[in-house]
Image (tube, rainbow, N blue to C red; front, side):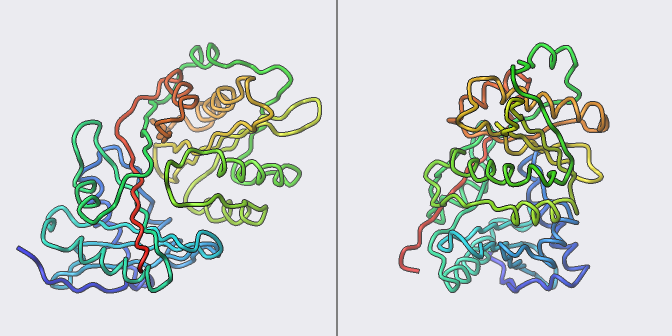
Length: 333
């Protein structure tokens, strides 16, 4: 049965409506993905009420008899990749296959086109075997898969003996770590490594161009992230000249027991010394010492990134699902 639903923009200042939006999102995700990592409610409040200067977001809801039964999320960059729009559609499991998702998507696409965006991007999760409802939905709407990542889990703690055996202890380098705020004397080099990460990370055929990460962007990101997460960063510094050769960072959601392993990069001139493994080991030691309440690490690696896939396998990560980035070009929008 197709429902006639009311689709409208969510009033982010309405505490009750924003909480209901969050709960429908959670229900939709968890129905299909037992290992999903979701944005926290605190993060949703920040995104919707105090948007980043580099990104603007519009939240849509589908209501049936006043109840939110589906959600839509439109994300638009402000300064770069002005042809792209990030779209997400979620429908409560009790209301699927009634035309709600398609109606939400049509409205998201309409708004994206009105903003001059001609390529729509979204991420979907697939089980290790079979196809998810999100995959079937995206394919029916004309999306194509342009990038694939493996979602891996690592149970904590990792035994000290394992970390000792894996740590290559690269000669001529020292590990430097911080929490939430890069030291002033390192932040410019840290920003440059983020820019390099954007150039080097595999992105398949995604219609996205790398962005220069400035110190201002780093500082803005640190400030915003700290509202919902603690961020642990380890960098490898060459002792002879103080040059940074690589970094890794982890996010620890407030009031949760998991860790998100985000970027790991070794700069081109510093590869071949075991820095990738050394950086990850350094952060895992900090987690064990300072955050013993954490139980699992989530990370995502491009299927073709054999270097990082091998490091994670040696550390004990195991695959739990596949994340697909799918894209639709609407050239005549």
